[in-house]
Length: 245
Image 1 (cartoon, rainbow, N blue to C red):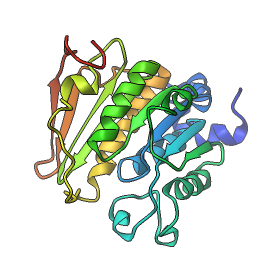
Image 2 (cartoon, one colour):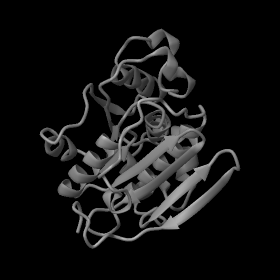
Image 3 (cartoon, one colour):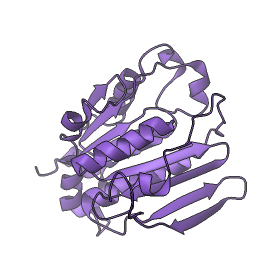
């Protein structure tokens, strides 16, 4: 659908980029992204995708907002304490950009309902904070053939990679499920760290939706906030990967 005058003004900085332009912006408005997790990582991802004009966002999270979340989870405010993160996210996203349709999923992802939900989306963002969910996302996205962005944060360190099922290394190729246990004690992170990593995830989603640039695939990008240093680690598909081999 052609952009209206209001949209041309809202997305003016995109329209002057030759990689996007009016056709690209129309494509973004027709795109659908599922963000799994509405916390530290999901906050900048959802806000930047909404601001960019990704037309439909699914927001999945089964948690309510706690005061300790507000140090980093910028989707939410003090007035939202105790409410579901998905409802708070929907309200904030729609106030930022009324062009956007938000579908809240106030529960955690499961093997059972994943195929139906993922069928409605073009790209998935893993913004979860536990290994169980990350391995699950790797499996269900591979089965559904959905590209996704993985990210993880802890203390002052973050990492992210993009996975295109059938073409690139997946999360399970890099991280082995056996022997990994979630820590019972929260390990930070420093508040601004998810903003750095989540913003990269949002860019990766936009690049994938528009088919521009080079995806962060077959590579793990790590960030050390204490030294302000990035490192790009090449990875390969594992021939014995139980998910994608």
